[in-house]
Amino acid sequence: MSTGLLHLHSLLRWVILILLLVTLYQSFVKNEKIKSTSLWLMIVAHVMLLIGTYQSILGRFGWMNLPEGVSVMKDSFYRFYLVEHPTLMIASIVLIALARGKSKDLNYSAVNKLLLIALVLILAAVPWPFRGEPIGRPWLP
Image (cartoon, one colour):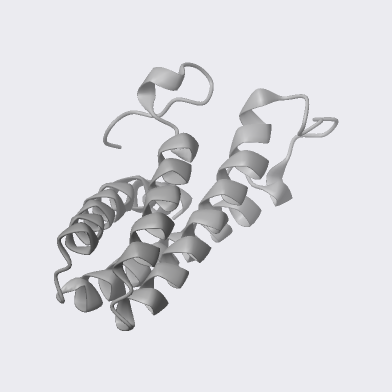
């Protein structure tokens, strides 16, 4: 089950990035369809949050399955997956939720700013293949 959730989590990152870029584009051109697109972005982001929370706590490399004697902050793998990745992703999901609220009022400039910051945080926190071992993950699972 853990492997399937990890694959789903990896595939949904592409859905989030596509929805985020579409929503960002809609906010720049001031398209009123941003209301529905931002809703879907927020829904997928929260689904990712639930899957990621499970992975961080109960997953194969989660907090409940840490090897004996591992110092999380000294090990780059565990520090990234248990501290840096969740922190940046939770911050980006908060920004996406705030942008959703602003999109209901059609406050395009606030949506632009919030989504741009969320995009930067997500791009920084995703374990891209070029990040190298042990952090990098393949483009597709």
